[in-house]
Structure formats: structure tokens, C-alpha cells
Image (tube, rainbow, N blue to C red; front, side, top):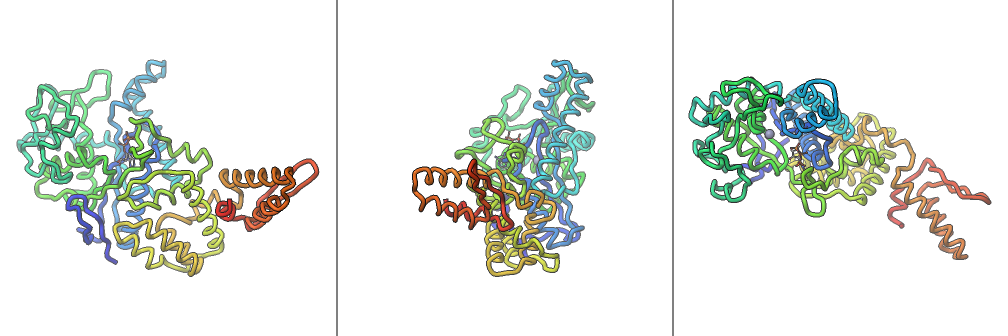
Length: 465
Ligand SMILES: Nc1ncnc2c1ncn2[C@@H]1O[C@H](COP(=O)(O)OP(=O)(O)OP(=O)(O)O)[C@@H](O)[C@H]1O
Ligand SMILES: [Zn+2]
């Protein structure tokens, strides 16, 4: 089975050939653990979860190594810890920093588990690889690619001819476009920090350049090297990380390990947007995965919506999409309720995923299987996308969801108003509609109640209201 992927480095869809088919290696930039993940942060998690599942399907479950890091060195984590300390929390600042990271990692796991994402093979924390980072930085200084100045160590971009190749920018463009930090100790304004000093009260590690902490970019270079080696297959992340983060990762890794190739294929997911702008903490236009789950949107519905758009296209979240996804999943879950594991994933679904991870095409293929195929086929094929799995089915118990409940209440109100206006034709039409959707309506003199029958299908309400 041939997999084709769009490599950001060549800007072409290429045939994927693993370096070692018995150990296909994937690295994805993980979250900075200072707060709850917003829905945008879930997009790379779900996209690369499907890639992980596809690679396991094609090369075998035990033949894929997936690394996704936790960035637990960060000013925003420090700021939270500092605020807690000022509010009288017990413990040293370092302990409070650790506490905040641990707590955020716990939330992250709970939220991403609820979306049905498999845990990666390794989830390294940056703080566990400081030694590797220091060694890598020392090597870069020795080979003339970095220099120490005023407690900082900087990467000299002039020393690496390939700088800018990933994002396709010239150094001049990058200077013009980026908000580069101008600092007196930089030889070139584009030079970026590998190591910086820490104040006494903030987390820091001893190094040849004094007590300090690593820059963000070197973390990923050191962790991917430690766990995946000089050359590995795929590096992923959101396209907001293309420049400078990934450009800098390449420069560091290529210069520290010139015998290797670092990542052969680069994959970037487009952004989840809100009114045309990237959902982000800094813009404040975000809601968290937990917010949605608490509003009663099932994790499986969130997953379905997120996978309905190809990863290289921007998308937004709408309540409408969630309602449609829920209706589809209800139909499919009902259809596959007694399906066993006697089938394997349908070829049409596998082929769609092999074509640059076309999850939207795979979902269209699932709709086709629902129409013309059997329940076993639908269930096994959907599981390749992490849908219709037993773990994700907790929400489906024949009860109406919050959004379906709204529709039912609305239909009953329209019916009551029509009755009051003696418009019996409309009132009857709504009663029929509710019946067809499998809602059992009980009228008494005092009031009307309703319950869900065994054939409840909210999509009938949606399509007719
Ligand atoms: N709106 C978005 N859509 C898709 N992916 C996103 C979005 N925002 C962030 N990401 C991705 O989430 C992952 C984790 O990023 P990180 O922890 O640095 O983000 P963050 O600090 O929460 O984000 P931000 O400040 O950008 O909101 C990265 O791979 C990043 O590309
Ligand atoms: Zn990274």
C-alpha cells in the first residue's frame, strides 16, 4: 500500500518510503504546558493520530515510533507559578512550576484521550533532556555554528547555507517579516537563542555558560535526536511553527549532526480559525476542548468534525457541523451496534488516507459503505479514523443530546403554538415529524412530556426543521 504525503520542504506530494519499515519514526511538536488545550491545539493531535494509525495499519502496530514532546520550560508556566507563590501557595518556585506542568499534562491527557487520540510511544518532557541540549549546544559552538555572549548562546544563521529553505524565504525577507528580537550581543539580528540566563528565583540548570535554561527550538532538536536518531521519517506540527521554530530546528540539527538528514518529510496542518483568524491564546479568541466536552459535545463528535476537513485546509468549528456529525454518528452507531470484528478496513477508506491523509475523502467513503455495505465493514473502516471504537461510544446510549433536546423542545413549542392558534394542520405535521424521528410524545391535560424511543434519529428533525 503506497502512502503519498505533501512534504512542506519540497512543496510536493511524494511517495513515502520509510528509512526502516520495521521502525517508522515520527516526531510532532507538542504543547507548552501552561494551560488547558484550546480546540486549535487538538487539530495536530487528531491529524497526526490518524497518520499514526495509518502507519501502524500499513507497517504493523509494533513498527511505528511516535514521539510528541511536552515543553515544560516556559515563561508562561513560570508566571503562573509566581502568581501562586505570591498568593501564598506552599513550596519553592521550582516546585510550583513542576506542579503547574504536571497538572497541565494531566488535563492534556484527559482531554486528548476524550478525543480518542492514542498516546504516542514517547512523550518526553524538555526538563528531562537538559543534558542532551547542553551537549548539543557545546558541539555547535565547537563546530563554529554558535557563539556565547553575555550569558547567552546564539546560533549563527550565517554559518548555515540552508537557512530559510523550509519556509522558502530569503534571510532578508525573514528579517523584514519577523519580529526578531534585536539585542546588542547578536552578530546578526536573525541569530536565535540556544541558551539564556535564568534569574536566581526561576528554574535554571548549570551549564558551561552559567546557570540558565534552553531556548525553545533546541528542545525539539535534542529530544528528537535522543529518541529517533540523526535521520528520521516524518516531522509534523501546525503551519504556524514553520517559521521560525522548524527552520531553527533544521539549522541546529543539520549542523550538530551533519552525517544525518534530520527529518525527511515535513508535514504541517493548517489552522483552526475563528472568523478567519487563527484560534490562539494570544488573540483570546479560543475555547478549550474541555469547554466543549462540558457543554455535552461528545469527544467522538469533536473528532468527526475535526477530521471532516483535509489537514492542509483551514477550517472553523460550527455548532451546525457538530449537529450533523452527531446525527451521522448516531445512524452509524445504530447500524453497527451488533457488528463484530470479522471484517477489515475497506480499501476505499485506506486509499483515501494513503492519498495525503485525505480524512474528508475517507469519511465520504464511510458514508458510501453505510449506504451499500455491511455493518462489519463500516465499523472496521471507521476505526482506522478512530471512530466507532468501543472506547468512544460512551455517549451513545439512546439518550438525546443537548442539541437534539433543543430541537425536540422547539418542535413541541411550535406544535403548541399552532394548536393554540387552531392551526391543526401544522400541529399534526409537527407531531408526525416527532413520531418519525422516534420521539414518543405524551399529552396529558396539564402538560406534554416526551421520551426517546428505540428508533430515535435526530437527523430526521434536523432535515425537516
Ligand atoms: N488554531 C490552531 N489550529 C491548529 N493548530 C494549532 C492552532 N494553534 C496552535 N496549534 C498547534 O498546537 C500545537 C501546540 O502549540 P503550543 O502549545 O505552542 O500552542 P499555544 O501556546 O496553546 O498556542 P497559541 O498561543 O498559538 O494559541 C502546535 O503544533 C501548534 O501548531
Ligand atoms: Zn518543535
